Amino acid sequence: MKTNGVEVFDVAGGMKLAVEPIEAAATATIVWTVPVGSAGDPIGDLGSGESNVLSEVILRGAGDRSSREFSDALDLLGVQRATSSSPYVITISATCLVAETIKTMELLRDLVLHPTIDQESLDASRELALQSLGSLTDDPQHYASIKIAEISLPSPFGGHGYGTEAGLNALTTESLRATWNRRCRPGGSIMGVAGGIQPSMIRELMERLLEGWTGTSIEPIVSAPPRIGSLHEKQPSAQSHVCLSLPAPKESDAASLPTKFVVRVLGGGGMSNRLFSEVREKRGLCYSVGMSYACGRDRGLMTVYAGSTPERAAETLDCIRRELARMVRGVTAEEFSRAVIGIKSGVVMAGESTMARASAIAGDLFRLGRVRTLAEIVASIDRMTIAQVNDQAADALAPERIADAALVVVGPAPL
Image 1 (tube, helix red, strand yellow):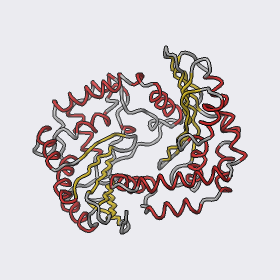
Image 2 (tube, rainbow, N blue to C red):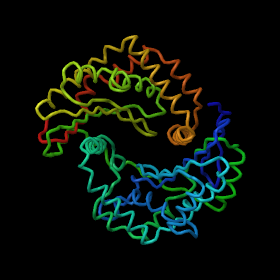
Image 3 (cartoon, helix red, strand yellow):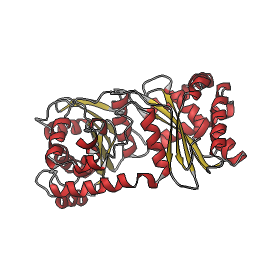
Image 4 (tube, helix red, strand yellow):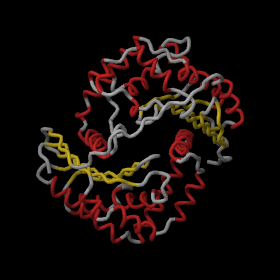
């Protein structure tokens, strides 16, 4: 995939726009984030879950089009679209043929600036949100990941965003419109566009479409520190789901890339990692184990998950902790080489789609305040040394850090 670099603009009274033209691409993808995330939701019964409902409602009619008409207009253009809510933003993504970019942008403009938010749309969206809330415990692994974030991250950023039954039922069309008009502002909004398009054309188009849109949304701030500690969520089951988390560098920190190497060696990259080999394969303590690293703008989190039986869950956790502690001795040359190949191939393969690149440049603008090219990211991986990875492993997984790790167990008994 050949690109001509990324151009970044300020448009519409403060919105950040990043555009990456991709030669020969037949499609264009728009990823538009607006500052209406779940961390800014009303508390509890006042309307908790508002952002989640809004992310669904805004697709159900905009401008002078009803829900059906708006959906039909997007379908007629062949637009693949989705919305989602996260603590900071609601993300709107759309992929279309290059020839339909302008018409697609016009529809997205209506969605962001003039969503209908009528009672019928609210009722349908609320019902979906209530179903999602009610089924959280049906997937214990997902539920464990929700609870570990809840105790590992500061409030309100550790909340799951699904809301409460009372909060969802408290939402009205008036309250949703007021929130959208107050929080959906160009200041704090970001758009990433990638595909067979020209940056100057996209900039001029957005300046015209968003003329008159002004203001800046107030970003939510930390209201309480992480709870950490241990949490047991009792569930009658033949399985125990264990999550362990440790704080990690944010994306802009120089230690974020070596941390990705550490996590790759420990619990990423399929079956060639230490946790899989030592906990599952050699000892048969669990049926699933892995490690992930979420690095955001303000903080990061390393999380280990294991699914075991209640009888072997404690031994599984002990083995995981031993493997984490063993990382202070460093990684081998073979492990480092595999990690380089795995991380680099993941970056390159992800960059083969316009969706991946639009998401990446929008994400970079939010987390770093600038955009990295694929070549820049690959070059940083090539510059990484085994000494840097080992230094980070020794620091991030020092004995006192492992001892202070947050723990969640979903299953019949605590550990």
